[in-house]
Every structure is written in C-alpha cells, then in structure tokens.
Picture (tube, rainbow, N blue to C red):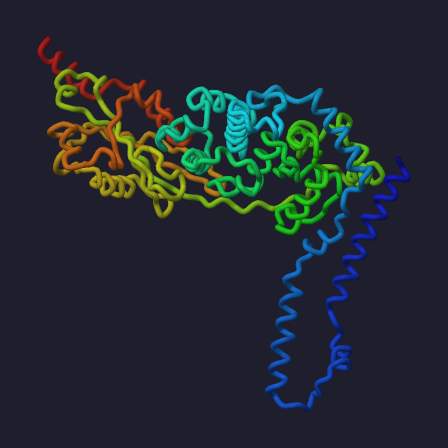
Length: 506
C-alpha cells in the first residue's frame, strides 16, 4: 500500500510540475520573440499595427486557457485492469447492498430478438417510462422525499399513454412540493410528443435527447437501465466518486472537467450490465462516498481510490478535499407582499357562517419562476416596505381581478399576519403576509362575467378544497400561517351577531 500511495503521490506532484512548465512555455520572452521575428522593427506602422493585433489575439487566447483546462489535461484514463476491478467490485457490492426502491425492478431479460413481440415491447416502454419519471424526480431532490411522490404518480398515470392524456394543471398539482416545476412540464410535453409518434419510446441516447426536457443524464439513465445501451450517467454523486478515484483537482463545475468526467465514466461502464453499473456508481456516491462523511472502510473500490491513498500517506490531505469546493453564488434577496383574500357572500353575512366563504387564487405567468402555478395574490416589492406601501400595491393588483374596495366590495377585516421566508435555489424570498376579508357586492358571479373560464387567471376556492389541493411549499407555508391565525380568532361576522344578541338581551 505504501509503495502504491507513494507512486500516486509522485504522479500527482509530476502532473502539477508539468502544468507549471506548460504555463511558463506559453509566455514567450520579448527578446526571444524579436530575435525569431522575420519583420524588422523599422517597417511601416501599418505592418506593425497588423502584427500587434495578431499578437493581442494570441495573448487573449492564452488567457482563455484557464488553469482548470490545463489541470484536466493531466487526468489519466482508467487502465484495463483497473477498470475490470472497479466493475467487478462495484457490481458485487451493489447486488448485496442496493436499496429497495419502488422504481428498481430486476433487470429485464428481454433481448433485441424479443422486441418484435408486442408484449415485450410494451414492457420495455413501461420500464423506460418508470425510469424516466424516477430520474426526473430525483434531480435536486432527496430519495426519501421522492418515494411517496413516485408511488402516487405511477398510481395515477401508470403508463406513458395515461400521462399524455393529463392536463398541465393536474401534473402541477401532483408535483406540488417537489420544486423545480419545469421538470413536471417537460415530462408532460415529452409524454405527449412520444405518444403522438409511431415509433414508441426512443431506444437510444441520441433519440432520447430529442425529447423535451431529456438531456445527457436522463437519456443515459433511460438508455442504460431500460435498454441496456452501454452509455455513462453522470450526476453529482458520480462526479464525486470519480474525482476521488482519480484525484481530480480541477473545478468540478468547469465544462472541461465535466466533459472529462463523462469520458472517464464511459470507460468504466460495464458493457453487459450498464444499467446496474450506473446505478451502482450513483448508489456508492449517495450512501458511501458522501460529501462530508465518506465511509471509506466500507467502500468496494477503496483499493483503486487515489485520494484515499494520498490521505493515508499525507495527513494534510483529506478525502473530503475532493472534489474541490466551489464558492456558491450569493442568493438574491427579494421581498413580496402576499394578500390572502377571503370573500364572504350575502348569505355568509346574514348567517354569520364561514363555511361558504372562498379564497382567491391567481395563476402565475406561463414562463419564469413557478410558471403556471396557483398562488395567493402577491406583488414584488422594491425592498423592505411599510404596511401602507404594501397595501397600496396589493389594492392596485386586486383591481386586475375585479376587486375594488371603493366600488364593488367592502373590507370586513384586514390585518398583517406576519413574515414568511421561502428559499429557492438562487433567491431568498421574504413574504409579508396579510389576511384580507371582503364582502363582495352582488356575489362572486359578478367577477366571472364576460370571462372565459378556460383561460381565466384567477379562481375562487373554498377552504376544504384548498386544504386538499396540491400547493407549492411556499404557498402552503402562507396558508398554514392563515389557518393558525383564523383558528385563534372568531369569525368577524359572528362577532357582529353576538354583539347584537347581547344588546337585545340587555
């Protein structure tokens, strides 16, 4: 082990030395450049300007060759023996230790000859569909969270054909809480595209990439797991495992590094069991070769891990130093005013009942953040704002939905509920939440006049339906705040009824 570790350390040191020499070679000394130049310094200005321009272009090109690109040049391929050992060790470990997940089924025994059989062809399509749904859900989401969503999804839409008949609203409602809603929309668009075709589910990575929302990762997962195409799959787990196996010190987010990790992953893929191998590599990164607490003693490929060998020989090197840490961009801080609008009709006022009251939901634009999803009325603010400013902005926005507190509705009660923070990938959003209870003159039917219900961007919904509706996690946070607030206070109309009763009794 010591000799192996020393050899790897020497290789690592030599690679960095080569990189330094390469950098030095790119900077040609001015005097040497002049000696080798065929152009005399006394030639006219036009020639000098032309050559000066050419020199500047060369300098810019050299600057564009970053340190990360040079480091990537030093990444060695996996050797034949090394590859065979990694394949055997990883597949053996996976057979014994793989997690029991609903989207994992025994590897299909269907061969290319069997694909002419209609039932076998349908089985492959269904398997590919299941892999597709699970892999899309697993992007940026923990396995524990995905399991319940996957089971509900497959129960509602067990095949690609079933999904293709769904509406975007149904899909968004089923997806609510998973985040990154563009994934759900792409799944639906892809299902419709494939169903409208005559060739069934695409069988190769190149064909799969033609489907909306399917990139290299998802295409590789479907092709290798469902159709046994020997292609790699690279996610964050795979990047981490390979970076440690090869002691890759370049920026893991850099395009050149990513390209080379795909190349290395492609060298490792087992041609007989590509799907199992890809899942094993991802499983290793998810359960053993974790970012902060790797369990190297339980790793099936620890003998092939360059970083582990280096860390055993040099205490200053830690396995968790690889892949190198990249400083995350600071989240943008946004502020918004959210108004939970509750409408009381005439019968509610007279009966003092809250059971027939409705909440206003508005639909977000079809493009951008949370595209096409339903939420409580909200407006973005320029920054932290006082209550008067927030209410003025909200009142102006509500006029878009035929709610004017000076014309067709009366404010029954209006109060601030508090602040709610919701964090997106790149945005830290602070929401100022208010509860606005209105009496709508003429009833809710007035607000629907001359509106096409198919294209309407707002709707009224009762509290029971709202509680069971698929809401985004941010909207759910706001609604939970309102429920707690309402539970602590009596209905405003009930107060009026009680007060009038007290006057009569007196």
